[in-house]
Image (cartoon, rainbow, N blue to C red):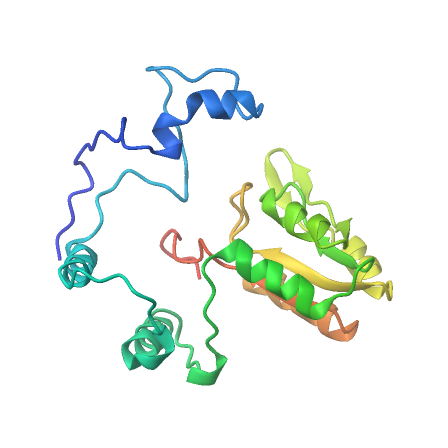
Length: 222
């Protein structure tokens, strides 16, 4: 299908966090200014219209006039859509039994932290990183362990020696990887990903990858 990426949609007055929550953002110290000249540059909330096939599916459901509880696992289409996408896009075959539903990325991370660590144990992250990583760890009574990224003139790299040292510490049980990385924008190379995986495997640390932006890549990147 042909998509019009140049269409401008005015979302002001639609209860949009991106466009209508300026005062709230200022109240929480997330911005100093928010007025008519402000252009909010969100990544996870873009101003492109929803594709027609998605709108059609929503209309089909709305037209039933019923919004009772749904059982997504009872529909083979749910699993097939995920499996077909990963097979076409990433050449990765996923078993149906390996697909577990979560209402969102942060909810999934919360479940992983509680499943694979105990209170007081360490969870490794790579700051600067998406703020909810820290929130998920701390609100579950776990300890944030920072394998800080190294900033080399605006290009961020991984401190592998530090990562290896931290994974060797027995109280550190989990590593949350952001791939591609938010906010520094790095798409980790295959060698970097392989090295991180080997370090975690060698030290019995569970690696959880947040790949929510994994399909937003330039040509030539994987």
